[in-house]
View 1 (cartoon, protein in one colour):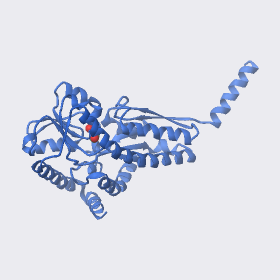
View 2 (cartoon, helix red, strand yellow; view 1 turned 135 degrees about the vertical axis):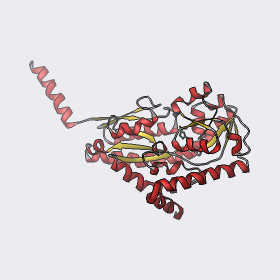
View 3 (cartoon, rainbow, N blue to C red; view 1 turned 90 degrees about the vertical axis):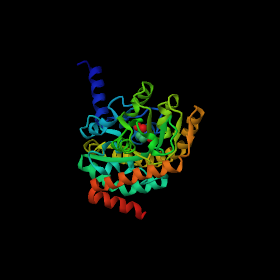
View 4 (tube, protein in one colour; view 1 turned 60 degrees about the vertical axis):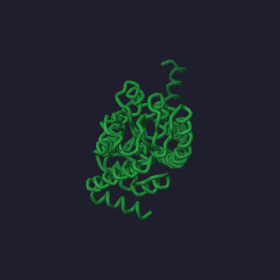
Length: 322
Ligand code: PCA
């Protein structure tokens, strides 16, 4: 080797040993402009900075790397080291993941935070058993009903072609006599355009992202529950980081959680304004509709408690004491 090339090769070797850079992929299921994804981008930037460039996280929004319901398994199997999941999607693995998908168990941001505190020890335990770690969660804004129908009671929902995003939202459809079709958020605009679905429950955020106002003109603001996204990491990938980088990740996660909960609440109003500006009526649900939907919630809580056993009871008891 020529002396110059040898010197360059040596310099490169020194650089890589002194500065081992780790690259992680972070699949996410929602658009780059959604507040969850923007928060994740900030989280990744914070880690880059705090680790002095040692850990680079590439965010893949819009379910471009994995579909929404595939992300958790991808992180578990380390096809992706870190990822964002919607917890309620994994209800069939363990009811613990579904606690924040039960209508009217916890409402409002304060209620959702209490439920999170009650749920977190169980989430930590379950994810640890699956070789993963919970880094942080952020709630979606409160869930309401998109439909063109004039709803006076739940009976008016019979036969709706209902887009579900989780087992719990499919269950709601069953209980009100609608027909559930599971469709991830990234495919919702197309499902609305083709008429595959004509109703669903979700936040103002997803109504805005999917331009639901182009097809549906009413949103009943039932504020029924606030499901959470969680950023989870493969435990082996985390353990492979040096201590300082691990600390940088945990600090950035704690900051992202505080920032995300605040963002969600602040943007809830903004999303509703945007829906209205685009011709959608935001409707205070009539009393009978609320009574009926609360009954749906009661039924689902009863079923959930049966499935979730002692852990479920402990979770709900802890929540109700807060
Ligand atoms: N948006 C996501 C989940 C909950 C929400 O508000 C969705 O509709 O897929």
